[in-house]
Length: 506
Image (cartoon, rainbow, N blue to C red; front, side, top):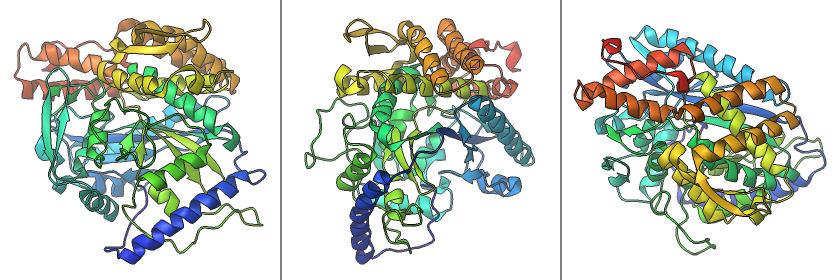
């Protein structure tokens, strides 16, 4: 979605040519990945931090273009709605202390954005969903006035009726009648990018799929939407329904899907274990999803050139960028492929996000190096169920996991399972060259969170309960948002946050 789209209209010929180029691109990608030396660079990790802009009343502030202009930093980009911004961090090698570098840069960029936002009476807030959002904030008028967002919006409108109904389960179920993808402005993520060598992609991707569920249980930070108590990670159903195109409700149990067996969700956890390398994921995206925005490149798909330059494959990269799986493959013409981990929420602090990153990447790396592939240890439907149960219930989610005893599957709560997974994540990080002290410190943050039983989602739930003892729901949400923002700015990890008292919120 990062591509700027200046073209206003598209013809049927544009769609036809684009579809043809997608087929050619899949073949070119297969040949490129097979070329000697491709993708053999140092393993690196990068991140994207999405944030809200909040005004003095704790409400979303539609200032992203002005703040981005004032910051004048290529790392800061616009996001879906006018109260969203994204910071793109510099990739770093996995060896040494990459998470310290990640955390430092995130803090610096947040300070830079904060300085610009304060001149308009606003502040940046790293959180999965801003508690004060209302349905009126998420209508088409909120969309950032850039071509790519409006083109995607119009394209998805061809796939479903408008307005369309979104339904959210939880303690206080709620529905939302949406008129556009502006509803996605309710979700801010902390997205990781891990470069993976082509020959290791299948095992690493499947390991990422298996690892994401339990890690998400420890990272929830989006429990409140439209003033209601919902899932610990309500971003998940919001995103899947907001970008959905007829594939069914989020988290629904689905049988293994074969081509032609009905609509495949465009935004989902996935449908099966990977069994054909990264090309399989791109080929599936081409086969299962029609073109949304057929921007034709001046560069036609070609295989790796004799000079060693990788092809751009612009159409394939654009198309894949409009299939929103929670773990998404990325082809980079700079000479590598990577996994984009999209399930983690923004916030609460850079330390919490670095800790979540270390846990997710470390566990993924550990699982990818085990003798047993996830495909042989657990049905895909079970791993997918772990993901949605974690998003719904956080640390109290029931998680199924392979036991150390002959690979049998066992069930336990996430808070019981996670302490057993943290040493595995440490092993995965250290084996990949991460400084042992860095791994220990960051995974210790996750351990503290599990021990205290307090994720960002839990703190928000507790704070709302406390504030509703003396304020109505609307006021309590505003007070909660201000308290969250102050605590996040302190940098203290969320498991150490106290629930504010009445005197502390005055």
